[in-house]
Amino acid sequence: MSVTIDQAFIKQFEREVHEAYQRQGSKLRNTVRTVSNVNGASTTFQKVGKGTASTKSTHGLVPVMSLDHTNVEVVLEDYYAGDWIDRLDELKINIDERQVIANAGANALGRKTDELIINALATASANEVADGNEGMTMAKILEAFETFGENDVPDDGQRFCIVGWKQWSELLSIDEFVSADYIGSENLPFASITQAKMFLGTIFIPHSGLPIDENDIRSCFWYHKTSVGHASAADVETDVSWHGDRAAHFVNNMMSQGAGLIDEGGVITIKADETPDA
Image 1 (tube, helix red, strand yellow):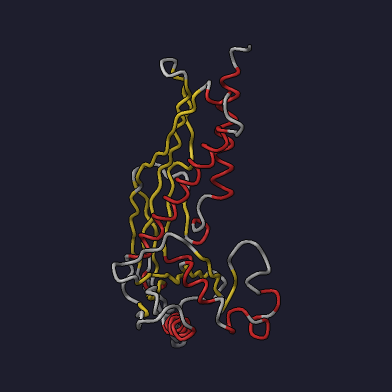
Image 2 (cartoon, rainbow, N blue to C red; image 1 turned 90 degrees about the vertical axis):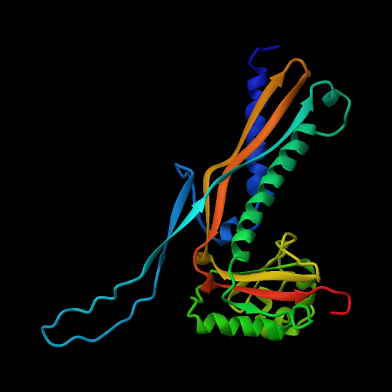
């Protein structure tokens, strides 16, 4: 056997982990501002305030907007997900153990990416739609929609709303959300297998990782893409090493990422009651 066969195994495993992370890892990374290849322990996102247009007199100076610039620092942290692949165990099982561990590691890191983004969203406190002892209702959606308008949040196709699966089921019972009479046939929730749909200029996405308190109140988040920043110093990387004393490969998946709130004016927290009688 070639002495380089181990390197072929390692390269194939690294490719499989990366592909699995891209395919089924993070749901939310593409819904926020993202910067990659950060060199350092942190990075900075710029927040720019609103400008105001004014008139000027003949031959007068053009008025200066004096935009307010704020720096938002996002600290990166390192995360790992590792496991063993026993050389002889692979001969005794009828599944591709390498692929199973590749998917498991990529999924674990993908969930961590989403957790970082959700934790950043949860720090926003300026706008909240109370639970009112109810689940997800059309009234709550319209209240949040109105708040976006009052806050001058751009309606440019970059709004996202992540809800729990209970709230997703409740949304599917609302005629305005599912009926072609309201949204057109191209935006029906079952038109694709992606479990996401456009409604009120917003992409609604069900997610299993949203916070819920001791009173069964779930926090859902409606936000604009520019309101949250995600930074990555190192995307998913894989290190595979052979340990002769264990007769096994140790597979270590790792990444260095962080997320932070940039503009809480573009984030609305919608509280939804999940108690059985809600």
